[in-house]
Image: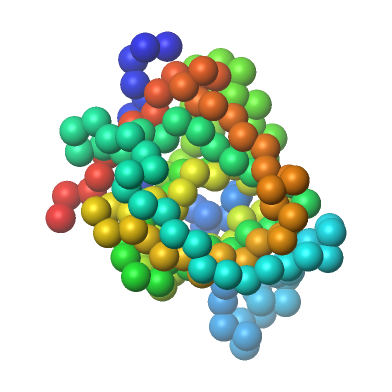
Length: 168
């Protein structure tokens, strides 16, 4: 478990993102009718949150993903509003009981102003900024997320995960 698992961030596309949620589409797109937000506690809340580079570890030109979070009672929508960022996700049924479970992780480059919606229960880390400037995120999630905030410590469960920064 000491050897880092390297997870390369890929561009965000609707097909690649589909196992984890959806990307909002125009209201005239027929796919828009198939999307819906879920708030089991009827507590949607919109705010701006910030993630900074000093919240995470780095090794060389890689970010270290050491934990994932999920919210079983609600979908979550995130839009970086000032800088590009990176987001790591895993399916809601991921168990993280062995190093092999890291194969379920996917990392995405999240450009400024790109919106993602996470299905309820989707594991996620970030988004975190690619550079030194903190990422400000328009965040739609359940107000009671603190009571519904499962966490898995990957450093204990499966071993370290390195996400190399893309070349400028």
